[in-house]
Length: 450
Image (tube, rainbow, N blue to C red; front, side, top):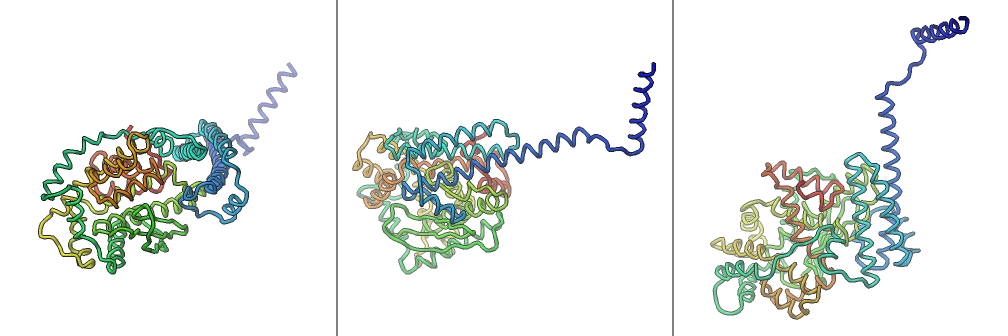
């Protein structure tokens, strides 16, 4: 009985101590919360390490292909180190696969939705890097396979004949003798911006694009861009994002520039296009979250479908309905010294041409898959894109240089449009969705309805 009495006495003493204010065990929910915090910190550290390796890997790959890195605004020392001692392509390919496997292992334990999207983004970017390295080493993929591996979506393209009905509508808008492409070119040439009016016309156009974007999406106070006109390029416009919320926007003047390109390029290269997207990624992901992987932008990656798709869709988002035509008629034509047409045929024609523009992807697929040769690709480009031989040559030269990248424009725009306009939202909600696309680790799969 003595031992039993002693146990009871000890128990009583412990209970008395508790009543007197002795330390209590933490509540169960507090312990769980602390565990969640530690797990989140460990997940973040693991992804940060993968991101650092991905960053250097991307910069090293860039030493093997000019233009592979579209933008970099991280520490200069990292870039200098990567460029001073890059691994060869075979070693980089092996390292890419190791990183992909490591990302997969880390992703399996993630629970936070945004962190899971970060891991998915890293994996998709690494798969694209693996594909591009294989291509550098001589591997050739079918057009659809290449596009899917590089840009994260498998294109389902229409046959060229499906655009013939649209060509018939265009022919009715531009009646006359000779080839339809020649008639369209001759008509659109009357809306060419004189070279001495390019600067003020584009500055006015970009200002309108910026004004409509900043009304809905907040921008850093010190953001800026510089506009240049250049020659000798396969593209019509390009944004070189340089970090610290600044871009260099270049416009190619190899061919006469028509009025329609002013707002198109102003939105696409500037607001709410490439300049805005890169600013928001730098602001929200690099600076606020410390996600270093977003300080580098490899051109051949799913990031490009989001970039090109949002930039193209941004034109219609900024200038819905008749707003684009009204801005061109009331603001830009007077600045450019172009006579305002008496009817809407010009804008009707531009809309019809855009509806036929998907033919470009089908032509690129047939050309890159070897179903047609280059002269045939040029001829078909003239016919379906309704352009001159020189413009058709420039279009095919772009395909020569960038290959399946061409899907990012039309297909990317369609995917962004479907996501932003799903359910017929208000204009404010459409802009809110657009802001999320350009401010978060967005993949093409994130745009698909579930």
